[in-house]
Length: 94
Image (cartoon, rainbow, N blue to C red; front, side, top):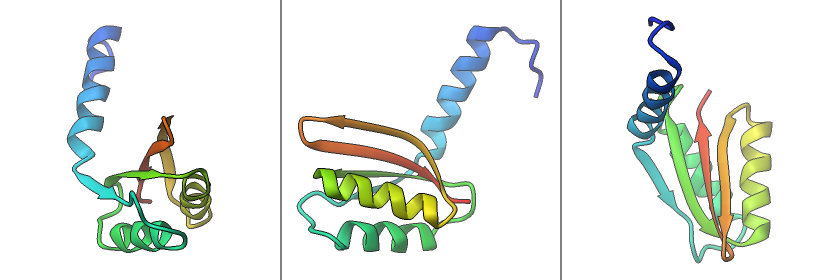
């Protein structure tokens, strides 16, 4: 990859890559603990290393538990966001 293509092109390429790779989605809204963590674990087990999964859910406890489990299992938390009681966590399987 040529890094001399300019800052704006590098940013666009990274954003495109993130969107392209985030093909796996998991909706755990309405699920009570420990089910969101169990569903996230099952989803990541079925994926190849390096792939991304976007987990959508609700609840502070679920938000914390999914992140804690992913980090303790050796996965990377790429991005998190919360809005109005709902959350989104982007996890890269390592």
